[in-house]
Length: 184
Image (cartoon, rainbow, N blue to C red; front, side, top):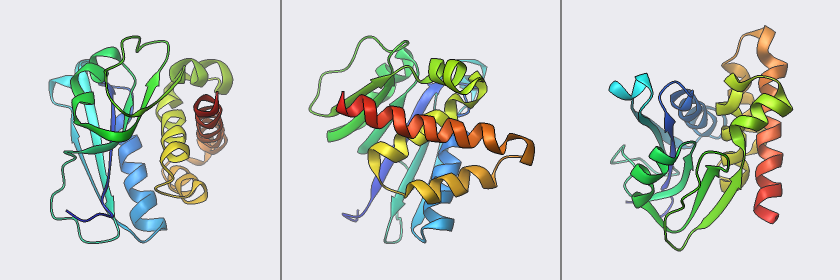
């Protein structure tokens, strides 16, 4: 595997929009940054509420294996997802968790960033449904794997005109809150 390979995993409960968040991250990398990107997902029975995941592999070189096996950055919106998927987080990686829902953190040598992602969507943006976009903004801020501008373009290319400002606000809120949480 190439040293330029970067693996992200978005995890939580089925129905939280994490598949879409992964797709948008992949599109930001491939369409707007000219990188190689592949997205895969697990949502069979998980679509009804169990742990689900969306994985994105980004590289400057061709990607020879589409699954994340040594995750650089993991988002966990639920305790179940954190417990199930954190074992693949590599040393020195980033673990982003919803501080209201993930209380028990795994042991390991990685950076943990905690803030109330779902409540930020509800209280600061005004709609819980955009928690996935808040989380996406946070992952962009913490990883730097794609630029803020190109990630925002990818988000806005995916939403109907009537929801552009809501999604822009959600993305920007996630981006800002993650940086504040990392420094705080």
